[in-house]
Length: 410
Image (tube, rainbow, N blue to C red):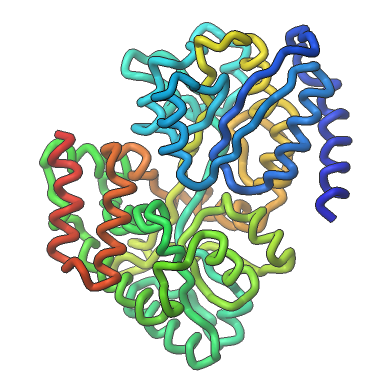
């Protein structure tokens, strides 16, 4: 099945490439290096890249690094082996690489291919466009509709108390309520951002208020409910929760072994690989006292950066344009199941992204915090939450630890 899908994608790539922009002329010995942090639809991605090579003659050596991508990329930077092309989370993380990045500011023919607002996180402090955006991503609680139906749950819980009642019904029906990927600090830190969010300020405003000292973590409106949520996850999750990685979490969820996970629509392709019939949707994260408080977080996050010192700079630029605005748009829509940052009329072939669209259209989403928070936020916050789940840190100690992340960055 995978080979068949790859063949189909290659055919689509080659057809689409006939209409794509002209690319640089390349000899057979032109090779560029690419570091890719995505962990989904890898075979289809490699098929797309094969199409690029077939069209241009440019070979691409890819390092896929879904796990520990931050440390691996930093290691390559430290050793003087920065790839020709690499991707990074936007915001604080990407700004770490701005000085090494090609400046796209004058490439207006490329910039006009992207949707309005998607380039905002691609600018450095001087307004220079040092990266290009990938796709819109939405995250929150995901739920398996079939599990909820089996447990007799007909209304989505809007508060933590209502969520607890759902957990009881699911457990009584023989279904594990949660399969949180608690081994992954990045998953836990993203979970926390739902409870940091002050909707009156949105994501950027909340981050700025914490950074300026206008508000403390302890004063945020829903922070206490974070710990109620974590207690539910521990009580109603599998044994040895902190051994559950993202692949195990998504497998359990797709196959109906667990009813809920915290994740984003970027996992659609992995869910499909585990169970193409998985019936899943967003459950806005219950963080407060009403449905109005519940959150789905939306952002155009990941960006691609071209190394300005690449020996094959033009080839690297053509590669990025190809995967972001050319045939790569098909890969984003059909295999990643996301809405591309590039302008397109293509439909998204994904249950989760299309479900998230109802919240986006209704203006019921908020921005991301973790990508613009201080650089240590994700790893440190995730570690604090793990310690709380193990009983090694108290609620107060976790709050103080998270607060110190912003205090130290101020």
